[in-house]
Image (cartoon, rainbow, N blue to C red; front, side, top):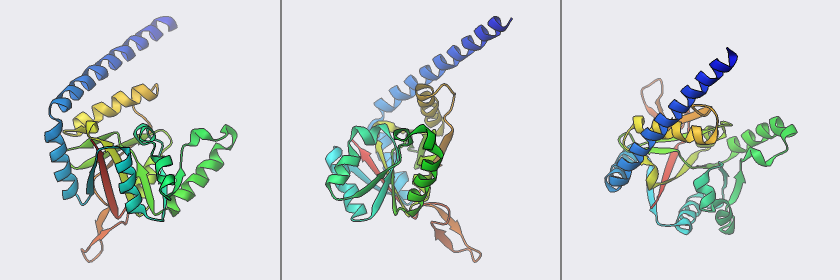
Length: 230
């Protein structure tokens, strides 16, 4: 009986994986055919949300843009495949930027709780936070972030300024397509349908005080920079 239940569960899981993969390929194909239009729309909506958007042709230009923004301040960096592929931690160090990487997998397992406390303190005291993204939502000007430890949310929300680096290939039309990308990426990295921490960021933090005046940075960054890598 238990074996039968396990087989049924395994079959449903395979069906789910197949369906997510099929949906992802459909989204990927649509975005590939409409990349220029999606890029133009994303820039328009991101700027409309108060983000400052830059286009960069390669890793050197990305590093130059970040170094110009950060100057001599400290920047905390999330673990992200694109940031690592671009070699940004090393390139920023070469440009004199003080970088703090938050990849908890580098540390001894027995000390992980202490390390997380230390990492959070570093994030909270930093002026700049640098992350990758899982998707850029063109129709809303939103950034979708996800990870397993929750550090990427802190890096995007606690520092004064959030800098996000995304490939133009990560731009999708709407939140429906973004969640398809999130589900697909979750299955690639974990055994679960969704990773533990998912954040949707739409421009700098903004709220109104008791007098109705708009105040930035109360519950997140006051500035958001988005660098799109072509």
